[in-house]
Image (cartoon, rainbow, N blue to C red; front, side, top):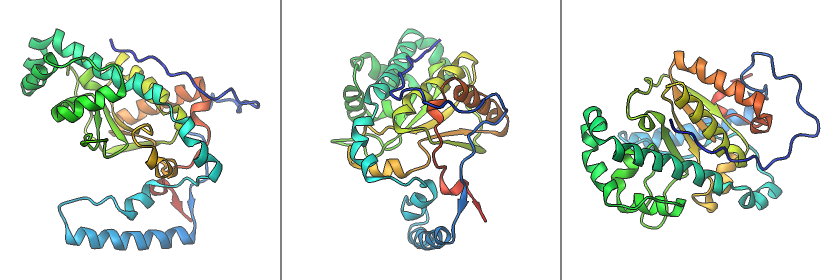
Length: 284
């Protein structure tokens, strides 16, 4: 069974603890309304997106429209100036390198069983046999640069495979079924759950959710924003409202919300009130 070391929270307990968290509400209630100017901004962004789509209908364009939909946070100058110091690189490293090496060990030690379920992994296993186990994020990303197929099949997969010098994007996808010898299948995606924990708490939340899922043989698929990838993208990262996205179905969503509620009760600092993406808000 795979377990990820829990990155310790860098935030001290709140001076005034929140009210009882025993009530069955999975998320802290926060403002979700859109203003008139928000809708105007949306219309402008949508018009530009529609034009881009008409010019290239076979490619989804991550332009102002998607940025608007996934955003929602305001970022103060002070927060931006200190953000680099808050990036939990050790937490990301512990989770990503740990998950990759757990998967690597499982494949090398159970090759026949894995190939019976996933024959297409044969060249991947051959690559793993001839490469060294990474010990740092830099080594893991370098491994992905040299062998992009490892990124494609890894349980921790960069949304944009690392380029020649650096990864092209911040999002990392996690598939826990790949950590359990492919004995389970992820659900067909019909629902999404958006979480927006503080920047420094993202690795801890992801580790917690993956641990729970693996212990209960519940395959989950999620992505999170690894703010250590490119410090130049920090401002746009902080403005987003979707630091973690879980992809699920109607049945599993209820279970995941239970995981989230239990995590919130155990670690309230992970869920200090923040803004949700604009796409999740109601229009008054």
